[in-house]
Image (cartoon, rainbow, N blue to C red; front, side, top):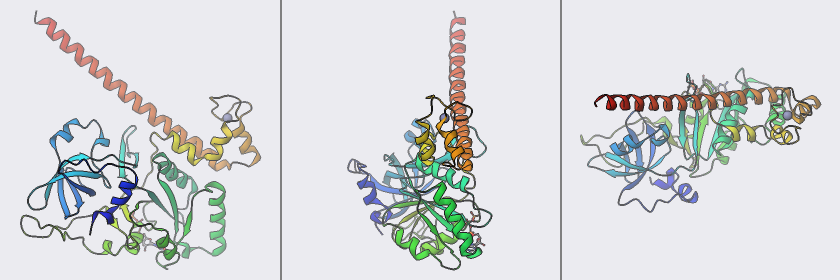
Amino acid sequence: MTLVHYGYSTLIEKSVDTTNLNGLELGRIIAAHKDRYSVITEGGELTAEITGNLRYTATSKLDFPTVGDWVALQVYEGDHAIIHKLLPRYALLSRKAIGTDSNIQLIGANIDYALIIQAVDRDFNVNRIERYLTLCHTSSITPILLLNKIDMISGEELDVLLDDLKSRVPEVPVFPISITQQLGIAEVESMIQKEKTYALLGSSGVGKSSLVNCLSQEALMPTKDLGRQSNRGQHTTTYRQLILLNKGGILVDNPGMREVGIANATDGVERTFDTIHKLALDCRFADCTHTVEKDCAVLEGVASGLIAKASYDNYQKMNRERMHFEASVAERRKQDKDFGKMIKQVKKVRKNNKY
Ligand SMILES: Nc1nc2c(ncn2[C@@H]2O[C@H](COP(=O)(O)OP(=O)(O)OP(=O)(O)O)[C@@H](O)[C@H]2O)c(=O)[nH]1
Ligand SMILES: [Zn+2]
């Protein structure tokens, strides 16, 4: 097993400089725990922590390693290591953290494609697909749609869904599959590219675990450290979030992707709703909200059927969420600033009182 299998050549292809490591080893994060990381290196799998310096200079979550990150690390005896440096990311997939207004949560770094999996039963929902697409477009990650459980519907019913997708999200490649019946799996496997990293996105119960088991032999087995041995002479077994696929791709499996919150995503919303965005250039007012204005090209598009009403509604909803997130972030920054000012003021008063 070498780092090439874990996407090293893609990292180089993206022009990330890996020559300046000053004697440190290169590795990729395969699982992130609270303060501990599992890292794959040329010599095998290691447990690592970050340096105090990295910890104390971090200003946000973005400064901490996440699954898929490439790092420079110093390896100590056994299988222990210290991460000194986070290499530049060429893509970062994140979402708004559940239950918060202004926090983001990292899903994975250095991801090339997203496999959005949706089931054709009750789960089927184009609005939610557009939500995932916005997430992908915001991070410049190419989306691919897997429509699972087609064994549960008739061919005619499937055609209706495919037509719906063609009109609402025409640019996205769609793979109708049934994991249990092994339908369309060969097509998915032949689409997977070697050394590219894929993120798996989808609600609970759509078949994500089933897909991982189907595309990867590794996932079925407990993962073992075949490289270095731990101090106690035992092989370590760890839970992985970065999995090697049979066809040579790499998969980020992020459990609990149940809700997709939209964070700062102006470009992502625009790219997902490309038709609306292009039409909006013809609105009479440059700051048109496409709701009540005169000569609004978007409203005209909805009236003429060029834009599906459902698509328009979802566009407005996601824009409202995006603005809400941005306003919350701005508000929190202001509060932090005010708090900083207050502390300064208090210090000043104390200092003055000394005299
Ligand atoms: N009929 C049918 N059922 C399927 C198919 N694929 C998966 N299932 C079933 O759907 C259920 C959920 O599958 P999982 O693979 O556990 O789904 P998941 O997305 O990993 O769910 P979470 O772990 O909750 O996120 C299981 O009972 C599967 O057997 C399929 O192609 N057809
Ligand atoms: Zn308008």
